[in-house]
Every structure is written in structure tokens, then in C-alpha cells.
Length: 415
Image 1 (cartoon, rainbow, N blue to C red):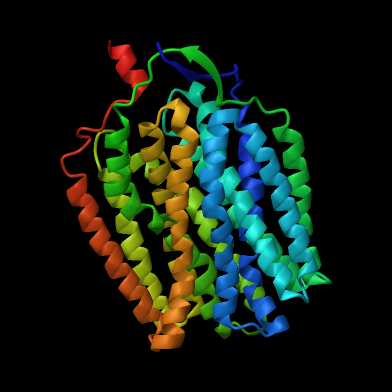
Image 2 (cartoon, helix red, strand yellow):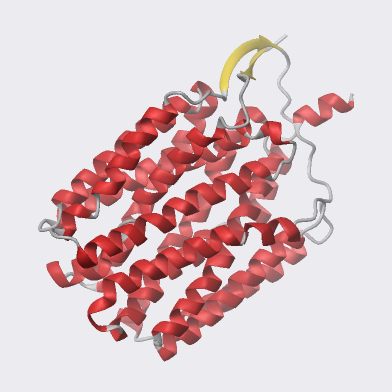
């Protein structure tokens, strides 16, 4: 007999998920509040677009390894012991950004800490929400709540930050104050939220049979799909608004904030659409999500070529639909495959792959600077690559649902 570990789950109420949701919203706020300030720092510090895109993307450098570490730790020790330090790091990151108004080096460190905080929290928090939503009786509820709460922070953070940067005194300081308050409230609420995911040793024989097919699914489906989730979000947050803001005069900061908030709001509003499209046992939701990705990038290419602020906002809205539907799809895809013992690390691995898309604006800025390609051309190339990925996913999942392995708990019940 081999000793392995099972997960002990507390009894939770129907509202227990609010704490984990607030934590995701607070850290999502901290992750995106920097986006509309790119224009401000560019004017104040004289930084180039490529430097600012790198600063924005440095967030991902802290995020990706923290996602994998946080997911594994939360599977081992529980969700709350990972989310609470993430909130503390998010708080510290905003403090450094406040101090970096005249010191670009502090902005780099602050963005990196924001990435680490997001990495620790997003995979763990999404897994926590899924577990705390188990009583809803619908496997889609957890992924939907995770998408809505994260995106609420993604949308509200830059909107409030952009408005404060436009009108408040000492904008490089005051823009971060609401986030500090929200994080403090989040810590108080999370401390009272029921934990989940903590393992207890029990004698049993570990079941290794699902691992190889699940790894294959990650390689063939999740890897070519996930980067488009935040790839569309990053284009709508950090790339397209900054291009169109040149044509709105002294309201550039507010314009960028509205654009970012619009993308997030549409991402939230798209959740009923994602739910309606979803058909268990088919690839319908996956291909619909990729269809929106291709359409939104092609529309963004047109907006970047014309540089109409109104057309750019419309493109940001379509990018928001692509993000909202694809984020829901990706989380649902992973959480339906992973068992409880590996839910944190599986969700974190998906999130890490999805955040590769945050490199898109930086890579396009480099291509524009060194190859002379126009933003519209680069976005059109990106749309073409997404179309190729869509064809691949259609082929890879065509016979599916197919022969995805049953989760260990399902196989045990079948016996």
C-alpha cells in the first residue's frame, strides 16, 4: 500500500466565494492600473514606447514563474496561505509605483512585484473559486466567476487610475491610493474565507493513468490556444489605445482609461454569450473563442491603420469579447480535466501560457522600430497567425470529446 494525499474540503456557504473573488478583483486592479498611465509616464519621464511596453511586459516576467509556484504550493498547503501573501505583494508593488513618479527604476520593480502577486493569486484564486462554487451544481460557474472577478479588477483599475491621472493632484501618487484601500479590505475578507485544497495523508494507491493524456491535451490544445486569451487583452489595453490617443488632444489619459475599462466591461458582458455557446462534449466554444480572436485582431488592424479614436474603441470592444469568451473557455477546459489534487497547478499552468500573450505589444513595438512595419500590418499578421492556430485547433479537437480521460474521481465512481 502506498501513502498518498487527498484533499480535505470545508463546508462552505453559497456566498463563501466572495472572498476569493474580491482577492482576484483587487489583484487584477493592481495588475492593470498601470495601463492608462503609459501616456503619462511617456510625457513625464521621456521614456520611449518600447521602454514603456517592456515595463508593462515586465509584469509577465514576475507572473509566469509565480503562477507555477503558487499553484503547486496551494495544492499542497491550501489556497489562503498563497493568496494572502499575494495581496501583500500587490500592496507593496503599488507603493513602489507611487514612489516611482520620478524614478523609472522603481517602476520596473513595482511592475515586477505586481506580476509576482498576480502569478501567486490568479491560478490559485481561480482554483479556489471553482472549489467554493462546487455547490452551484454547474461546472461552468467557477470559471465564469473567476473571469468576471478578475476582469472587474482589470476594468475598474485603469478606469479609476486614468480618471485620477487626468484630474487629481499629484497624479503619479493618487492614482494608486484606491488600490491600496481595496487590497486592505481584501486581506480582511480573505482571512475569513473558508480554505480549500489542503492535503491530508491517506493510504491509497496513486492513479497515474490520466497524466499522459492530460499532458498531451495541454500540448495539442491549451498551448496553441492560451496565449490568445491575454494576447487580445494586451492589444486592447496597452497597444491600440496608445496609438489612437495621439488624436484626442489633452484627453489622452482619460481616453486610454476608458478604452481599457470598455474592454474589461465587454469581457464581463460576454459571459452569457460564452455560456450560451458552450456545449459539453464539443469544440464549439473553443472554435467560437478563436473566431472572435481572429475577428478582433483584424478589426484592430483596421483601427490601427485609420487611427480613428472612435473606431479604435469599437475594436477594443470586440477584443474584449474575444478575451471574455476565450478566458471562460480556457478555465473551463482546464478545470474540467484536472482532479482536485492538481487543480491549482493545472489552472496555474494554463494561466502561465495565457500570459505569454502579454508579450504581443512589446514584440510589435520592436518590429515597428526595427523593421519599419506599420501597426496595422503587424496586427494583420497576428490575425493571420491566429487563423492558422484556429485551423490547427479545429483539426486537433475534431474527433474529440472524444477521448479525453475521465477524471480520477469519475473513474472511481464508475467502478
